[in-house]
Image (cartoon, rainbow, N blue to C red; front, side):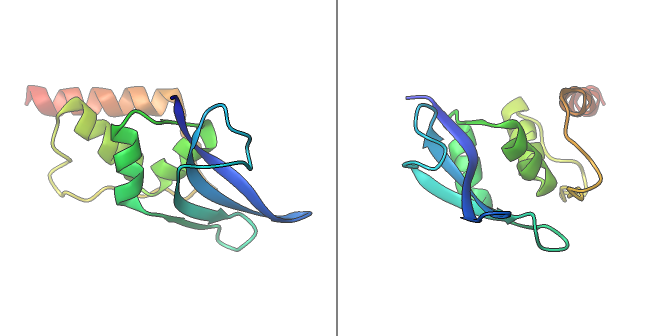
Length: 126
């Protein structure tokens, strides 16, 4: 069963509220999900993002693929960076802290992932 980490839309018309869930890729957007990982409220200022880090990392380790928006939210909280370093078998940077990104300012792209992998390789070479 292919599992995706994606947003499930809630709220009323013109007032969206989203749950971050792990769901079967074939299930409907607002259908059955396997586990709730957090929530995202884009209406509040600043945008309210709450993600259970342990649950998210568990599903990522099990092979769940995040959608682009879910990956952006995971990156904002630093969870995607932790997962990437863990997957590469590299320790986190020396300070041990993962920087968070303001969701309104930056978009995570594949180039950012490539840069992250290159940085991890440079740390390994030293």
